[in-house]
Amino acid sequence: MRALITILMLCAGAASAEPDCAGSPTPEQSELVAFDPSSDFDAHPGVPTADETAKLEAGISLRPQLRPCKFKMFELGRERMRERGAVCKDWTILGETLKPIKGRYRGCGIPSPVRIHMVSGVGLNQFALMDCETAITLKTWIEVVAKPAFADVGGGLIGMRLVGHYSCRTQNNKIRARLSEHARGRAIDISAFILADGSVLSVRDGWETENSNDVLRQLHGGACGLFGTVLGPEADQYHKDHFHFDTARRTSGPVCR
Ligand SMILES: [Zn+2]
Image (cartoon, rainbow, N blue to C red; front, side):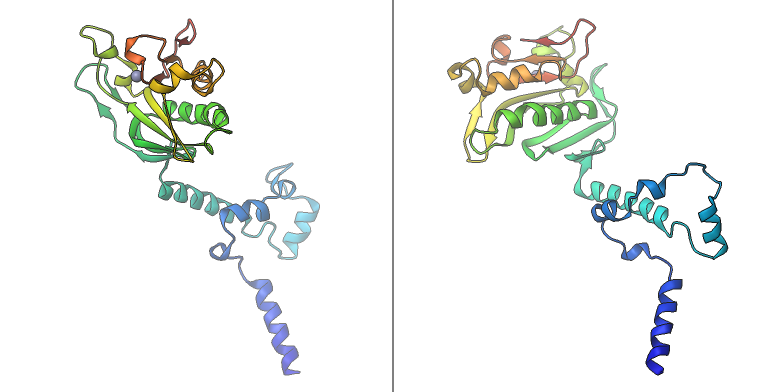
């Protein structure tokens, strides 16, 4: 008899216990466990259905803690993104968000800069300053063009050497030239690609020895259109050893040389 009373008390406790978000699954699990489109969709918001009315009258919670838990999980996910160093609202772009940068000269600067060091698992050899549009375009190019191009080469792409990012200067450092896209945090210069087996493919050495379909040509050609300007070793004397990519937008379309 005593055992029966104990079981009844435990059951009663379980039925009246408030669902506790603190003990909820992780956000990833929560997406699998908690999300149920049919239960989460209101055909007539604010108007209880007959089934809901019956449940309300019986004192049963309709969606016990589901929405508060999901909201909490969303917040937790955002917090983890920040802890991990994700910027530009993208899990795969790691770095830090900085205060607006003002350059020495008029027109220089970045209103909402980020300083990034890893993009889609590809490490950068130095922190790179740019705006989010450029960081996200770089991520797209890495995922859509660069990683596939290196899929069967050296175990895949793991790093890139940069020789330029934000810099308050004119185009090619020429006096009285127009301001460079680097001066607006909208450009990046890449000189070499580091592969999983430790090998390095540099633009300077690789471009001359490559055939027309080889990796560096794929990287250069695939950037055209994603970026507004794509310059490589055949553009001019200033780009013999690196690719220049920037997110300048022209009504006449991208410039790729
Ligand atoms: Zn450049």
